[in-house]
Picture 1: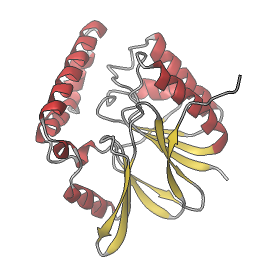
Picture 2: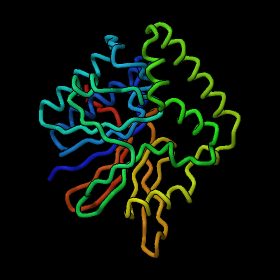
Picture 3: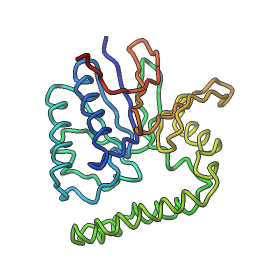
Amino acid sequence: MKNIVFISDLHLDESHPEIVSLFLDFLKKQTKTASALYILGDFFEAWIGDDNLTSFNQMIISQLRAATDAGLPIYFMHGNRDFLIGKRFLKASGCIFLPDETVIDIAGTPTLLMHGDLLCTDDTAYLRFRKKAHNRFFQWLFLIKSLKKRRAIAAQYREKSTQHISTIPDHIMDVTQRAVCGVMTKHHVQHLIHGHTHRKAVHTFSLNNQPATRTVLAAWHDKGNALVCDEGGKKELIDVMATTTNS
C-alpha cells in the first residue's frame, strides 16, 4: 500500500545543508513508498528565475528528476518565496505544476490544496505586495534584470519581510477563519491542506453544518514534517528526522 505525501515550506537553501540533506534522504524514500508527492510552496528560500542555474539549484533539480524518472509523480505549487518557478524548471525536474486552490481526491474525499498565504486576509500589507508580485508585467520587469541585480532585490525583500514579521502581531500573519470557510465553501470541500504559516496543526470545526478539517503543514527547520495519507483515507502528520546509523 503506497501513500500520498504532502510537504511545504522547506525553504531549501545551500546555507542550511542539514535541511537539504534531510529532504534528499526523504525524497529517495518516497520513490519507494509513495504514490505521489505534493509540494505546497516555499520549496526554496528564494527563486529569482529559472535561468539562475547555480550548482545548488541544478543539484536539487537533478534529484527531483531522478525521483520523477523513477516513477514518482511530484506536484509543485507556488509559494510566496518561489512563485517565479516556471516551465523551464518544471521540464527539467519532471514536476507537475499545481495551481493554488486545487481540489484532489484522497480516498474518496474531495480535498482542497493551497499554499496558504491567501488565507491570511488580515495581513493587508502582504496581500498588497502579493498582488503586485504576481502581476505578469511586474514579473517580466524583474526577470529581464541581471542575476546580480535580482539577487540584490531578493535579499532586500527578505530583509523587509523579516522586519514586517517582527513588527506585527502573530495573529495578523495567521489565517482567518472567515477566509478558510469562504474558500472551502467555494470549492465544496470539508478538508483543506495548506502550509505557509508554519503552525503545524489539525483544526476541526463545523462548516455548513458538517464536520470539517484544516491540516496545516509545518516548516522544515530543525526537522521536517509531512502529511501522509494512506489508501484507506487515514491521515497522519509525521516528523521527518535524519536517518541515524550505528557505527
